[in-house]
Length: 367
Image 1: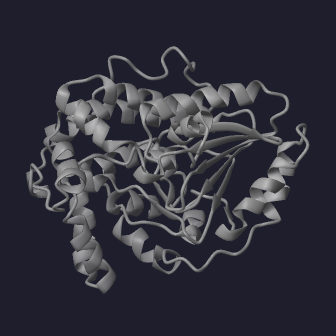
Image 2: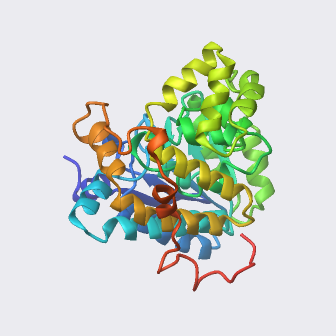
């Protein structure tokens, strides 16, 4: 029989431990695709505090238990239930999740994350800001929020807008999944390692001296790096740049209609399944993010927009259709892009009365 301590460890949502020179953070909700709860966000924050102070820890390694994925996002059902009940849990979750995302981007030690399997939403937030981001042949990276009446968050308006192309716009609006090569192409991951070698990577990192510099972490990981299987986005990049180089959804759809290719037709059909309001909100966030110089400012803007999410029809309808009833037939309101008004979109861009970073990061300080 398993011991009491083993049983408790198996039930813990986050497993935190030392393995040689590594501080390990293991997300432990495999049956829920390691979806993040508020308790897990707090566990990660506390672990980062402890590992940062520990002189015997050279780097942090974040992984997901099970073989299906690192993390499928935030616990959307808990947010749905909390929002319906008028609870402060959703707002508290987003507040602490977003500040954790920013903290990862500033972390003082190497932050290594294995983006194996499904990496979506909140899973992106705890990985994309890492210093060493590993993907595998099983990686499926996505920001599918426009399909549930939400918008790509956790700083998506920052990390999808850092390069001079429209691949980030395509990813944010369509929610299409990316494999390893495409995630690297878009700048959302760094290194491809075959999944069968992940245990070797972990052991090699754990075996480094505790006083190893960041360069030793990079060199060790590079020893396992390979060329990823061919992606799909590179040959489509010119077309994506043409289609998505506009500041309104209507112009993007017009460009797709005019093109008439099979790829354009596929994108048209896909976009018509998304929440019209979410598409408009997402595009505005992305365009504002492109002109923003700090991650924190993007997170602040997204956090303010979550207040409108909790008041919206489309979020609850999208979660109902995707998670609760699973009929995959959301009834959006407004139901047509033509019926989305400027006031509908403006409601998502009202500053928060309780901002995230007002008392933590002085204006103008580096990310």
